[in-house]
Amino acid sequence: MPKNSNLLQGWYKRPDIDFGLTVKVFYRNLKVFLKTWKANIMFNFLEPLLYLWAMGFGLGMYVSQINGLSYLEFLAPGLIASSAMFSTTYEVTYNSYTRMAREKIFHGMVATPVSMDDVVLGEILYGTFKGVLYGFVFFIVVALFGVVHSPFAILILIPLFLMSVIFSNLSLIWTSLAPNYDSFGYFFTLLISPMFLFGGIFFPVENLPAGIRFLPWFTPLYHAVETIRPLVLGQADPSIVGHFIWLIIAAIITLPFPLTMVRNKLIQ
Amino acid sequence: MSELTVDQAIIAQDLTKKFGTFSAVNNISFMVSRGECFGLLGPNGAGKTSIARMIFGFSPITSGTLRVLDQDIRISARQVKARLGVVAQEDNLDPELTVLENLMVYANYFRLPRNVARERAEEILQFMDLTEKADAVVDELSGGLKRRLTLGRALINQPELLILDEPTTGLDPYARHMVWHRLRQLKENGTTMLLTTHYLEEARQLCDRLIVLNRGTILEQGKPAALITKHVGAFALEIGVEPGLHGQLLSWGSPWLKASQRIGNDLILYSDQGQELAENLGLKIAKDHLRIGYQRLRPTNLEDVFLKLTGETLQGSEDETEG
Image (tube, rainbow over all chains, first blue to last red; front, side, top):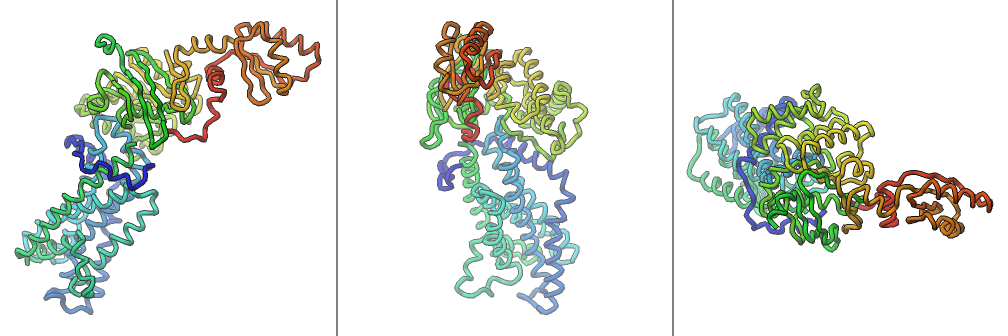
C-alpha cells in the first residue's frame, strides 16, 4: 500500500482513455444495477420523500413564506438536488470501494484491453448516471405535488448532470484514500451532511451568520440548488448562468484527481 | 534476433521490480517459447506474482525489458492484453451476475460482437463443465466452480498466452485436478502458458520448463525431471535421528550419496541407488545399535530440489508478504 501523499504522482499526465471501453465499464455496472434496482431505488428515494413530508408539510405549517414562496415550493426543488447527491455519493463511495477493494472487479477489467483510466471514468459515468436518475425520479414526485411551474424545468438535467460529475469525482477521491468502510463515515458527516443542511435546501444561505455566509459558495450542492429551484418554479433569470459556470469549471477541475489517485492506489 | 522472437511468447531481460527500496524481482532474464507451459516456482514472496503482473501490464517495470507476444508491454499494453488470458490469484468475478453474464460482460471488454461472444461463452461453459450452472449467480457458487469460471472467462478472447497466477491455490484436491485437466487440454491445443505456483505437484504435472525463484532471483532453471536428476537423484531417504549422529550416517552413506540435507533432527540423503543406500545403512545402524526415530525411502520431487538450493522448504516462508 502506497502512502497517500504519493497518490497524486503524475496527475498532470494525459489519461489513457478509450471512450468505447469506458462505456463497457459503465454497462457492466448498469447491468448489475438492473438486477437490484428494485431494492436500491427505495433506499435512495424514500429518504427525500420523508424529508418532503416532514419538513414541507410538518414544519411548513409554521413557516409562512420564504422569499415569496410557500415552504413546500422552496424545499422541494432543493431535495431534487440532494436526492441526486446522496445517490451518487453512496454509489461512488461504498459501492465503488466494494468493486475496487473487495470484489477486485477493477483488477479483472484491467487484465483486458481496458485501462485503469477507462475503469475510473466508467465509475464516474455510472455515479453520474445514478445521480441524474434519482434526481429525475424525485423531480417527477415534485411535479406530482404540483410544484413544477414551467416546461423549462426539464433543463434541471443539466445542473443535475454537472453536480453528479463533481460528486462522483469527490467521492472517488475519498474512496482512493479510504483504508476501510468505516472511513466513509467521515466523508458523510464532515462533507455531505453539512452541505445538505446548510447548502440552501432548507433555508436561504443569506440566513447563515455573516462570518460563514460565504461557505456554501464553495459547495457544488449550493450551486445546483440555486439553478434547479428557479428552473422548477419558472423563475429562472440570467443570474443562474454564474452557477452553471461554477458547476462546469468544478466538474473539469476535479476530474483528473480520481483518475490519478485510483491508478496510483491500485497500480504499483 | 527477429527469427528468434517469433518463436518466443515472452522475452524478459534484466527484469527488475522495486517497491520503494525493496526489490521484489531482481535482474531476471528468461524466455518462454510458444506452445510451452513455463513455470515460476517459488515460495510466497519469491516474486512470482510481481513477474506475472508485469507480463500482463498491470505492474510497471522498474528496469529491464519485457517483450510479450512480440510487443513491448510498456508501449502496447492494450494490444498485448487483447491477446492474453489472465487468471489472477484471487477470483475477481462479478458476484451479482450469473455465470453466463460474467462471460458475456467480459467479452465486451475485448469488443467481441454479441453473437461471437455468445458462441464462445457456450463453448467455454461446455469445456469447463459449467453448462448446467449457466444461470446460477456467481455469489452462490463453490470455490472450485468460481475458479473454473475464472479460468473459462480468461479464454473468452481465445488467448495466445495464458497467465495463471497460482490457479489452484485454496482449492480442494478434486477441484484442483479438474483445473489441471483443463489446463492440460489447453496445452495440447497449443496455448502457451505461464504458470506461477508453490505446488510442486502442479509444476511437475503441467510445466515443460520452469525457473525456481527465491527472493526475486533465479536459483535454477530447466525441465522438472532434469532438475531433480541433476540436484538430488531419484530417491530420498529420510532419517529421523539426533543431529550428533548425522556425521556418522553421512560417512557411511557416502558411496551412494548425491546430496544431503538437514532439517532439524531429520537427515535427508539423496541418491540414485535408494534401495542399496537404505539397505546398507540399515545394516550398519543395526550393527551399532543406533537409535533411529524413523526411516523412509521415497522418490524425490521438486521440493527436494528447492530444499537443496535454498536450505528452506517451499512452505517455509508463508508469512512473508507477496509482492
